[in-house]
Image 1: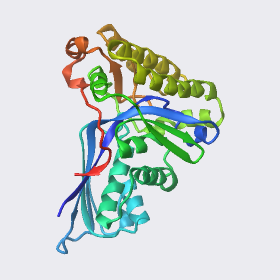
Image 2 (image 1 turned 30 degrees about the vertical axis):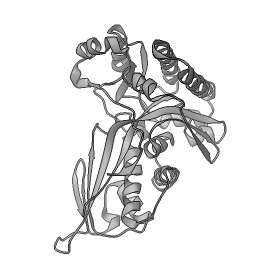
Image 3 (image 1 turned 90 degrees about the horizontal axis):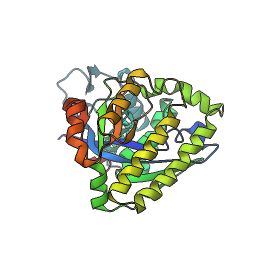
Image 4 (image 1 turned 45 degrees about the vertical axis):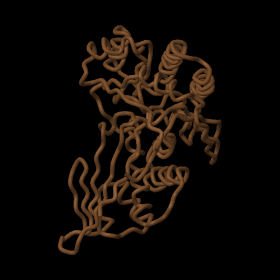
Length: 328
C-alpha cells in the first residue's frame, strides 16, 4: 500500500537571519511567517522481491540502490540510517513549486520525509518533534548551512512567531481572525525572479559575517521588526494592515540586503522596482537570496492589473496552510 506525506512550503516575513545558530546562541532570535497551500509530497511503496534493488528514488532524477549507503540523495540516506529503517521501498517526490526558490522546500522535504518514515515505523511524533528531528538531520548529520525556521513552519503550518534562544524554541500563533488572514493572503503575491539557487551556498558569507558579529546591528533590527509586525497585524485592519505590512517589509528588505553581498543583484533589484511601478506597495525576496521568489504586497483592487503587467506565468497566488506536515 502506498503511504504519502506532505509538508507545506513557507513564506518568511520578518526575522530571517536571526534563526541561525551563529546568532541565536548569542542573542535572541525570532521569525514571523506562515505556511502556504503549496506542498512537497513524498510517497512510499514497498518493493517486492522480484526487483534487483532495495531502494528506488524518483525526484529530479531516478536512482536505485542495494544499500542505504549507496543512496545519493543526502536527506534520504541520512534519515534511513539514523532511523534504522532498511525496508525496501520505492520513494517518489513531487512539489507544487520548484526547489531552490526561497520557500523552504529543502526543509519541507526533510520534515515530510521524517513524517513519512515515522508513519511507516508506527512511531507517533508531535509537530515539535518533527521540526526538531528535521533540524537535527540538516544541522548535525548533514552539516548544512541553513537556519531553523523552515523546519518549524513546515511542521506546524499556520501563521506563527517562532523564538529561538540557545537550545530553546517557542511557538506563538498569530492572533488574527480567519477573515483578516484571508484578506491578507489576497493582498500578497509571489513573483518568480527566474533564478534558482541552493541556500546553503548563498549563505556562506552571511553566516561568516554573523559569526564574526559584523551583522549584529542589522540582525537586531530585523529581530525587533518581528515584534513590531506581530503587534501591528493583531491590531490593524483592512487597508491599514496592508499598507503597514508593505512598509515594514520594504524596511526589512533594505536591511536584509546588507547582510551579504550575494543576497541580491541588479536583476532582482530591477524586478522589485518593476513590481512597485505596477502597483505593489512593497515586499522582499524570499529565503536566503540570489533568486527564487519575491513576495510583493499588492492591494486586492490592483491585483489583476499587476498580474497582467508582470505576466501570469510568473505570479503565484496562494492561501495560508493551517495543517502543517501530515499523512494524506
